Image (tube, rainbow over all chains, first blue to last red; front, top):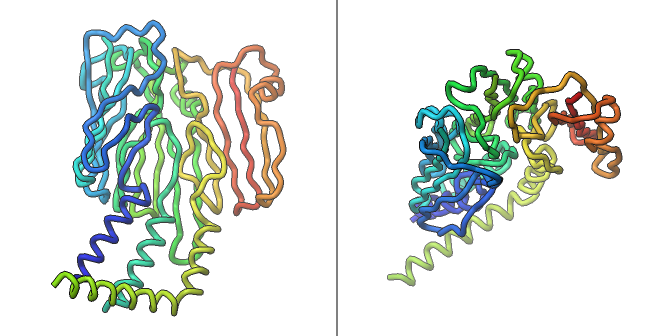
Length: 110
Length: 119
Length: 130
């Protein structure tokens, strides 16, 4: 019983400190507390933006709010898609019960 | 036993609540308690910005953060992560875009690196 | 059975509460000390590296939109200050920094963040241009 108490307090700590759950981006759609599978823009300046024919992705991962690793930079997304110019960027966010979170940058260009 | 656990929890709470190195950037992926190491976008405004083989020059600079939680309790941040000094290192004439890398270990040490790409 | 589990958990929470009451002043002192050296930032800027609550000597970008941006040859600075969390004054605008550097066009902006034990804080806007 005391381990259950300890574990639930740990989960509360993870949720309420904002250190292990949640992210920041220019646009955040309404999120589900348990499961989130959403996409949204990162580049919010859409003047004369041609999307381009190529796309590339790069991701960072978070496990249980304890360990976070990965590379979701635009450079890696551009390299992944073989892009030489970047016209626009979006992102994808996946959250499964706060056990696994994945933040993916998607780059569009030529 | 419960006293030891509760004291440990309080210590844990204080260290992890206060020791989380706070920083501001346009995009912050989910962070973690024990170890956090990721790269994320800094520039979010693109319109044909050169990337890949079109961005020939690369440079970076770091800032560090350390929390001495056991002896003095001081939090110290130092380093130059301004674009001008990073660009001057490799004589970059045109800046195309920037990413950043964030490393944090146990809420005690953190490193914030800006990666700059251009020509 | 459920009532028994509920009662056991309540007893244990009560015991934790008693312990916390015993160490109450120590906990409050600890929290106060932590808040004094906390990593909270009292200002906002587009990019702020991990903030040293006690001592912070860092530089960071302000302008993060680039379009083949050339860093100009001229440089100007302007600062805003905060003393003892009580008084803040100064002019950290781009206009005064550009005027100080005698430039007519601004191509890029960085900032310099200085914090000495929370007693003296300075935010300096650094502009580059021609």
